[in-house]
Length: 116
Image (cartoon, rainbow, N blue to C red; front, side):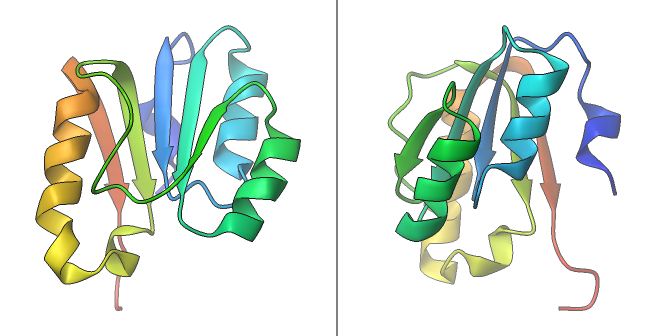
């Protein structure tokens, strides 16, 4: 599944949960340089690479269970092949936080491994 099939090219804001080195955010910045971009990543080394790759994005070291963003802020949230890495006891909090920061009518794009 290609997440970009579900994102309108003129989007206003996007949060990438588990942004790793910022590949998805970098592509978003190319598509729409005016969009407010943010990412959350638990891996500090990957986050440093992401900061270099996407200097315009707000990149936060942390997990999805405690998002430091205001409520109803993001038009899109992506969580691509990340859910299975969130400890089971934190998943409910992660979904609660994603719902909190997603604006009404916004879209959560979530993928998980097919056979994993």
